[in-house]
Every structure is written in C-alpha cells, then in structure tokens.
Length: 101
Image 1 (spheres, rainbow, N blue to C red):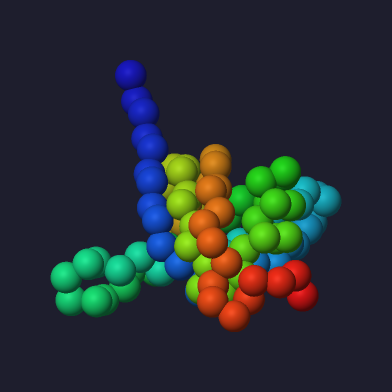
Image 2 (cartoon, rainbow, N blue to C red):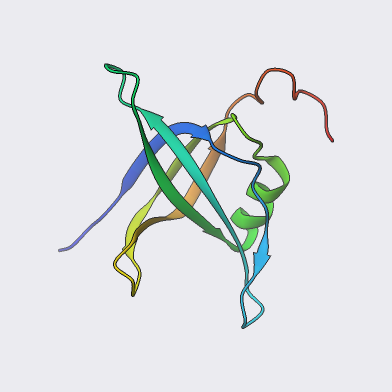
C-alpha cells in the first residue's frame, strides 16, 4: 500500500489570491515559510489549494499569518515540487492586520 501525507506549519509569505484555471477550476497558490528552529533559516513550500479550500484560503490568508497545511507532494512537469493542500488550518492573523481590509 502506498500512502503520502505532508504536514507543514509556518507563515504565509504573501496575501493569498484565488485564480481560475483554463478549464474554469478555482485554485489558490500561496507559499509557506517554515523556520528550522535552530539557525532561524526558512524553507519555502509552494502550496496549491483547490475548490472550497481555495476559496477559504483566498479570503483568510494574509502575509505573515500562521497556517498549518496537510497535503501531499506533487512534482510538476518542470520538476518543481509543490504541496497540494487537502486541509488548511488558519492561525491568528499577523499583528497589525486584525481587521478585514
């Protein structure tokens, strides 16, 4: 049996913005920076959410916000890795951005 699950927790590097594919499907790409906890160096994970998850991410995720992403790794045709989000949990909004804009 094959199984893959990736869980990352970090900060969004920019405000998330929904997009529409050529086939009309909604998706929201965003990047999560995860600090290593030792040298204060970050690893940047490109994440893509689809459907209702994409809608929620686009409405909620702002730059600096803590997010937890559960998903799986995908390799694109170009060989680049991204995380396909199955679930996104939103942490507190970053300081100074508590109100809706």
